[in-house]
Image 1 (cartoon, rainbow, N blue to C red):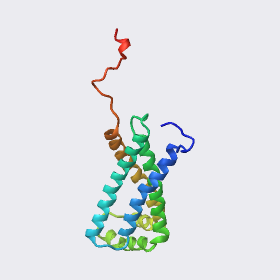
Image 2 (cartoon, rainbow, N blue to C red; image 1 turned 90 degrees about the horizontal axis):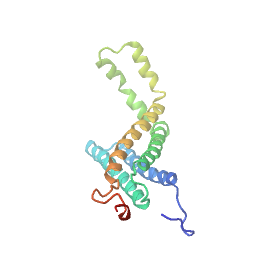
Image 3 (tube, rainbow, N blue to C red; image 1 turned 90 degrees about the vertical axis):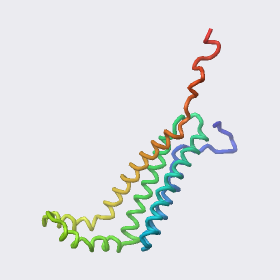
Image 4 (cartoon, rainbow, N blue to C red; image 1 turned 45 degrees about the vertical axis):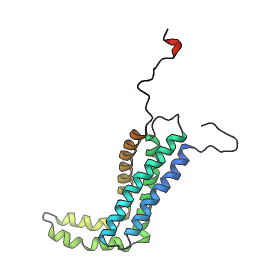
Length: 182
């Protein structure tokens, strides 16, 4: 793609940030809707929409990037960047939602801890103390876990999509130029 004076060239990083933000928006919207105490079936449906929508959107972004940058044979690297930025946004959203937007969800989750501890054999008092101490740092832990989990999933899906959208050489084309054949 050549530079033209009237159309500014956008860097790979800024495109990936924008696409990552849009990709994260699917997760943020579906997660927020799921947090509003929806029935079980609707919760599963939202999870499926989030999964399929995210994969399709990542495929769309990677395919579009590959079409606008024909010099790039594989779009896996671009997909990984998109997923990195999306993971960061999702992790920050997880922290903010647990700390500020839905602070009661942490207490609600930890309110079932006594039943879990009493029904699980082999939990020592030291382990029980550690579990209760996790409550204070639960938003930070979930932020880190969300970042890692979403990025690993993004790596896997970017690799799969990148392989499926790669431009392959024609196996029947001659590698040498006609004047080199003589």
